[in-house]
Image (cartoon, rainbow, N blue to C red; front, side):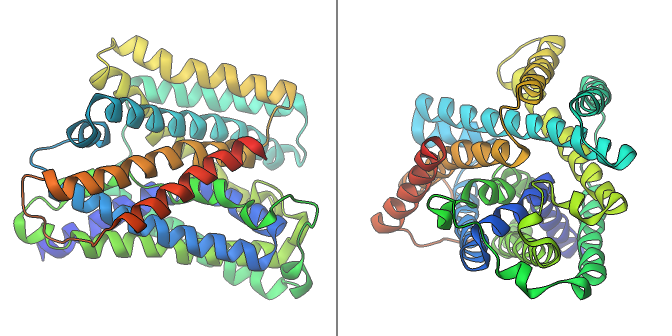
Length: 379
């Protein structure tokens, strides 16, 4: 019974890390790319990340002691690997925090006034930032056993949205795409990769499955925890794109009305809090800054960069998460593949499961992640 509960909690931790505010940008990029290429990206990237999660799980099980991702990178790739993993984590976390502050201002102005103007966008972004900065400073926690309840609520909300809006869909909307996009087949890559990133949850899963028998469930927990987000994303994307087509906004719930947009408020709120706390703890615990300076370095850059983006119209919500996903997520994926190869030879314990690896797999996945990073800068 305890083993089953622990497995369910481990699955919930991974799903909760993956399904966050990134879901809000998926319908837009699929609508722009078209049904065929959009769904290939959504399913293909999801399965690739499942494989990378499994490799990371094996790395963790082969390694003695308790570590986070920079620690595993140090063991198998040395100081350069640890530095690059730290950069990857901080880039994706800063990118997410900036996107959520930007997006929350837009959604809240829509909910309260039905429009998004510059002044309203700035006002609600500032209100959101003040609340979240205070919560991050005082360290309010929302993770733990409550993650299972939160994940269940998100899944139920997405299913309810689908049940209500799917009967109102038009097939012509689903078949539409934007032919002006350069290399539209790869256009959704960054946003979708961002939405699937759950690397940081895998070490936490090991801590939950802390007995020998429980660790035997690690592989199953990773597979289930990685497949459920694929199904949820498919359902949400098909519902929204069928309903709005090319008119789908980059924050999808705006297309579904004010009530449904509360879902966006909830996901961005919880995601900002979890990521903000994790970012502060990197400065505080790993880099040994004082508590106030750790909070300052976490929150103030987000405020300044977000306001600059809003005032000067530098990027959209989807562009921000696409950059974070392609660049930071791609770098993290490359490092994990290099670690997986080294861990097969240098690991100090026998893992509860093992995934086959060869040079072709390593080169193919590293090439994919590297191409995604280059694509983001070029296009």
